[in-house]
Image 1 (cartoon, rainbow, N blue to C red):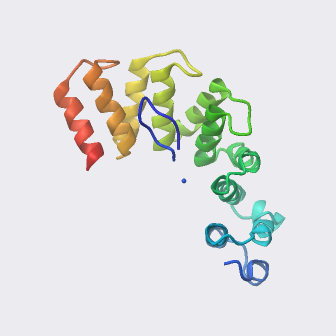
Image 2: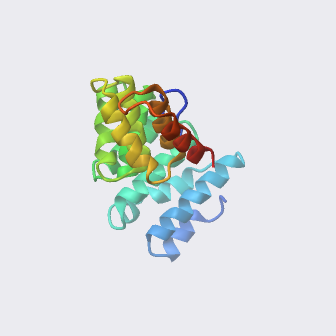
Image 3: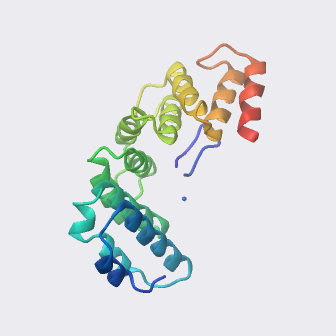
Length: 203
């Protein structure tokens, strides 16, 4: 998820959750099912504290892919626009090197959502995720370089990161790379390449 050159990504049952956690060992699949329950409950306007409290149980957070559980919990808070809690849980997962959490934390810093707006921190976290091959983070880092936010403006670096994400099939990055070719920024001006990448983004 994120901002753009000018357009980019903004990457976003109640029932027996506690009993569910007691009868099944916490596994990545369990965590994902709990997260899906949170989203479904929120879409139906139902309360979700019991499900969230299950995701926060130590046996889920620490013993079974803690970063995954923390990231999913952050996503559930992001979905309900509780950016303070989203930032808290994304940071816990990001501190363990979880790329999606690093990227999302960078976006929160970029937008100043319940964390101080800080483009340097935004670029820092996006780079950590991009260095792991996270396509969304590669695209976001390209945007940082194109806009000169948190890093020195550098269209060559912008094109580099857009291309890495574009080669993974990310449509927003394909569009952004095409935009740079059309403008001749960071790459030789080439309308054929511009059309090629924009066409890939549209498909």
